Image (cartoon, rainbow, N blue to C red):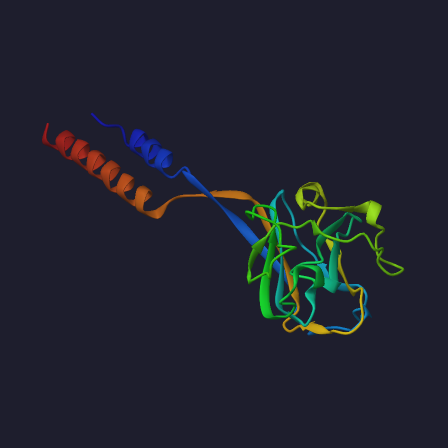
Length: 225
């Protein structure tokens, strides 16, 4: 005899989640950013306000959407979290005079991700893609208000244990005159929040069908006795 409570218990077991996916939360500032021939962008820094983010951060990414510049080797960018942690995105990316060029890039999309295979290249021309933060060729200090070089890190990992809510600040500066650029569609940050377990639909459906068949067969046999 099959007790109905047992059938319910078996059903409940198969409803337990069996794989996990992360929740992604993105904040953006799509304002076009003009990179001057020399000096800092305006405003300096450019901010994104994050709010309502809860839970453990599994990963953090930053996207620069549509960067163009006639001499990228002159440009550097640093991100500062709401808690004051500074991380170098890049400084001196691409080929400079000593590498013989080419110097210019047009409307590339860069995603900075701690899990990317490599940092942005400093000796060859970059392309759109995913890069680790931290690539730095030069040691010149940023303008007043930006972090000092000694306080700038090269990894997003510290962000995973910080409260992410508040103003994220992007400092961009061109350190040498003669060439300008822009970031056409601004920038964004994305948090992957701690994985939330959810059931896999195909697996759960098959399991529930099997349990239903067992319980129905047991109930039918009971009625026949």
